[in-house]
Image 1: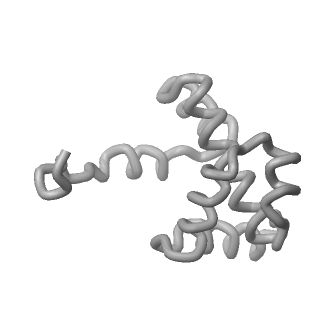
Image 2: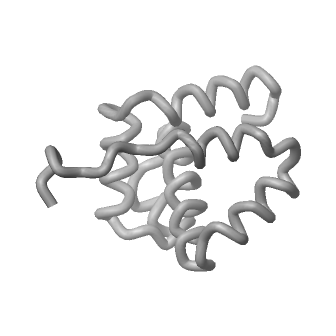
Length: 99
């Protein structure tokens, strides 16, 4: 599909996520929204991002998460050249003492 013909992103999902008030609500919502494999992939990518932000090397991350080198590379690219979403989350978790 040509990027110019791509459907514009909707804010509805993201607004809905912001209405969740607890980890339990969030987990229930994502359990309803995603398949088990989709959730596992999202959780794995987040764990990879966490390890990369801590300075862990690819081989250690692969061993700890089972993520492919392609996944680790893709997450690393997002950390370095993405829109800063991971950085915002990591910063806020650190402020709360959860990082």
